[in-house]
Amino acid sequence: MKKAFSLIEVIFVLVILGIVASISSQIIVQVYENYITQRAVYNVSNKTELAINQIVNRLTYSVLDSAIAKNQNDSSDYKLLTKINLAIDTNLTILEWIGYDNDSFSVASTPYWSGVADYETATKSLFDSPGSNLNQVDVIIKNLSNSEVGFSGSLQRPAVIFHPRTQEGDTVDGTCMGIVDNNTSCIYTVLEHNATSFDFNDTAKAKLITERYQLVWSAYALVPVKQANGLYTLNLHYNYQPWEGEEYNSTSTSIRTLIKNVSVFKFTQSGGVIQLKLCATEDIGADYNISTCKEKAIIR
Image 1: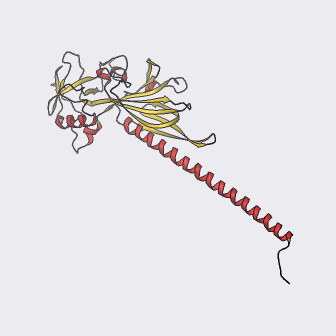
Image 2 (image 1 turned 180 degrees about the horizontal axis):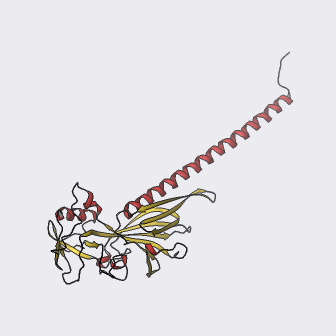
Image 3 (image 1 turned 45 degrees about the vertical axis):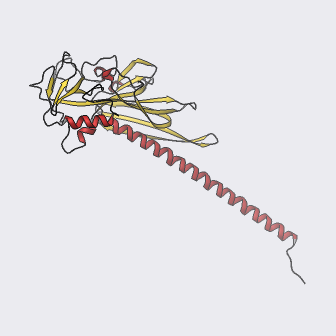
């Protein structure tokens, strides 16, 4: 007699296979969803970390008290970063500052500009900076600025800022460095007199020269631009000189996109500590997205 499965046995097997297939498909879907989510978390976390680290690297070499928060729609609306109140100043979304020339200062074992001025022999026309090698400084600045800034020819001029001010009522901050209101009272454009001496470009301008100075050739601005989806693209503007009348949105300014899909960009300063918060979003489809935030502190 030939043996075979009964109809009930076949149906029973098919039911079991259906249950197994259903469970397996759910597991596969769950594994795939976890993979998509983890990949999105990694991507947005990595992008946010890279972006905020680039910001920190630039801000670390900002001139003391040069940072300004600005209203993107009203250039007359601004505050020093030290005066920002995050709860009130929600319209001040642009962070702008002047960075000192760390590249030619730290590229060699002996800085190419020493940061020390012989103020006792300084005049309205020039000052000596012992231990400097301004020939090398000129080469580095021209290379970094795409030959737009330099000590000679028709190029835009670097500038020097002296710290600290000691006269009563005389302050040095971003409001006198050309960033706002065309006020350049505490920043002086310079040329190379020789390898260890600077000539002032404006010999008639009154100057208060102290023992310490910083050499600058570019300002920087972090500008959030609204996207169609309501989030923001965070752009870094650089290679422009406010002391020469240029603004962050000048046609000659260099621009680099740091990160897209930004939901939060906040900054403040308390004492000597600059605090940053950056949040970004990664879309994973079906109206779902992943967000991550990074916070950094820069001690000045």
